[in-house]
Length: 176
Image 1 (tube, rainbow, N blue to C red):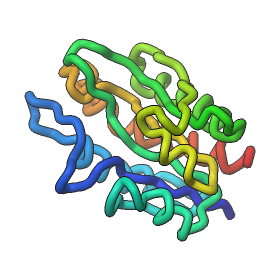
Image 2: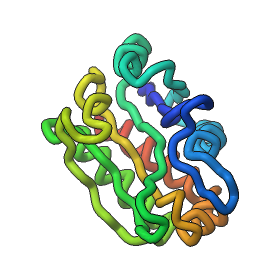
Image 3: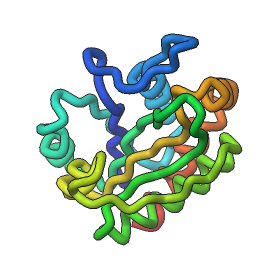
Image 4: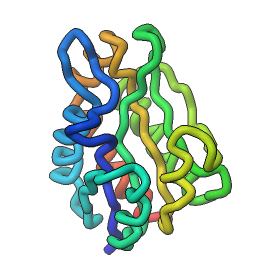
């Protein structure tokens, strides 16, 4: 059986982006979502990973020796930008396949603007994690948490979102 490390983006003391209307942080949203995803995955071992520091995160994950990695995040920009995207390391063909699988599932679940999959280099935002993990890794950005409309959709379709991740994780395990 394959193992998927689900990384909860950010941490309690550095919670990432926030939806100002609800005061929900990226960390809080994804911490709960990770548990919901884990409850829905039946055919893959799921390991939740919490970040100690950004610098040590790849090594911390590598110690667990997962088959693949999904890092949960939420985008933020200007309170108006909307949509779903998944990032992968530009030299990882498996990362690209993973990103395509999850992008399709997440767009179907939320119905937001399809911003596509995006290749990242080591110098790009998130690139260090994508490059330095031994297993293929993606960073998911299913919605813009600072956009009240995106946040409302993600909140209303939370169960569908968790199911989309679970289905994507199962599909990824089948191809790796």
